[in-house]
Structures are given as structure tokens and as C-alpha cells.
Image (cartoon, rainbow, N blue to C red):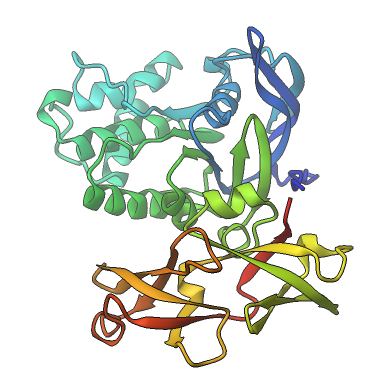
Length: 370
């Protein structure tokens, strides 16, 4: 069952999508999507390619118009309002800097288009470049900048107009891992400092979890779940979200009983308690699939009471943790991934070791088997 995106009310809402549908020919890119973005919120649209997240962003920007539904910015319906009148700042995936203009001219472009006085332009450009730590580079050309510096220019250009909403379309995808991480931290600091409402598009789960106040997980033109990063990661409401966001193991078991707000599952010779969630109304002994994160599994001695038993078939050292792959031929068709903190697991559980697996209580979600 999908979880609908709730719509908040009142002056706290900066951007609202009300039952928005968008079609491209016979293809329906968005199916009656409703979403409310609060003022000052960092909202992320997360999903695989083709899920509709960039289409939703482009609708907010005014590059497309919806076929049905309405879009409101600051309470004003903007379905037919052109982009330049929406007071939005847009940062594109490829930065879209003007190659023949200096850094300062690129940043000033939106202000000149709005006929801001020249002294005011100079002051605001200087402030914007200071904000993104590019003071002193006003006269450089884009080709003289690194990828990270070009990204900062694009961000300064989007922010200098004091936008009502900042729209970011996968802005970190072209950066290497280390630079991407540092730019994520800086962007979040700037966003918090300015308090600007931000809608961010990405397909990178770790990026979405680390940056967002809330995120909307999308698939096939619909919002599948809306919530905080912790809610999405720890309590996915459907199979797609559980499998798309982060790593997850799927273990087959059966429902033993409902105990208050929890379900008790029989997993091998062990019992596991999980939040009742979608199992409400399920019959006792019904087959269930338990989705559990690698860090919520623990390797134990094979002789102990375990949910699964198997053999260590691979180890992957990741610095701060070790990924252990366990083959459970009799009970699980796929290898289970166990994430063990530190490095001791490399020697304690060598390849070929017979082991058991236990599951942390309350740290999985279960769905009845289709």
C-alpha cells in the first residue's frame, strides 16, 4: 500500500502541488501528485530515472505546465505564470554558465534582467560570492574554474535574486566523491543560514538521507512515501521504498501473532518483533517477507538460537565496517549482507565459517508475501 503525500495548510506552505498530472504524448509522467513544501524546508525528490522527479521540478520552475491540477507558490496559482515571474532560483545539473561572461557577470545576470540598480547589483553580487567563498574570482571566466568552483558560481547566481524557492536538479552528479561530500555540507549550511525553501532532485539515496528535512520517494509518476530521512529509512511503508532506499535483506518467515502494536514473526527457530505496519489484519501463520538493514543483522555462533544459518562466502573491508556475505542455501535464495562495525569481523568470521544470524528487534519491516 502506498502512503499518500499529506498536504499541510496555512501560511507555512511555500510551494503546493495539488493533484498535478503531466503527460508527454501518451505517457503519463505524473499521476495526480500532491505535495506541500514548507517555508525554509529542504525537500528532496528521490527516485530512479523516469520516476517523474525532474518533471515535478520543471513544473515548479515553469518550464512545463500541468495538464491537470494546480501549482501554488506563496499561495498564488502559477500554472500559467512564466518562469521569469516566479522568483525561483534554478541550479542545473550542468550548471549552464555563460562561457563568454565573467564570474561576476554570470552571477549578476538575473539582477540585470530584473532591472536592479547598478550599485545594488555590485553589492549583492559581492555578498553572493562571499557566501559561496569565491571572493576575488569576479573577473575569471568559467573555463578558468574547477568543477566545484563552477558549481559555486551557479549556486550564487541562483541565490543572488533572493528567490522564494531554490530548485536544484542533481547539482552534484558531475563532481568526484570527496568534492561532492564537501559541497553537500556547504550547500546545507548556506540553505540553513538563508532559510530559503529548497526543492532538490536526486537519485542518490545517501545524498537524500543526509541533506533533507523531508523527502518524497517517487516511482512511476507517483509519490510512494513522504517523510523524514529516519522515517523513510527505518519505516518504509511499501516494498519499493524498502528496497530502493539503502541496502536491505529480504528474509521469508511467517506471522506467529499480533502483540499490541507489534507483530511477532517466526524466523527459523527464532522469533522477531517488528512494528505491525502493513501486517494489520493478516492471518496467523501467513507467509511474510521481512526487510531488514545489513547493520541490523548480527553474526553469531551457528549453535545459538538464530533466524538463519549459513556460511561466510565473502568479506568486503570498508574501513569503518566490514560487509560480510552469508549464503543460506536452505532458507534464502540470495546471499545475506551483514554489516559489522570495526574490522574484527575479518578475523573472527573468516570465509568458509559456519555461522548463525540474529536480527535486532524492532529494526525491520514486514509485508505479507504476494
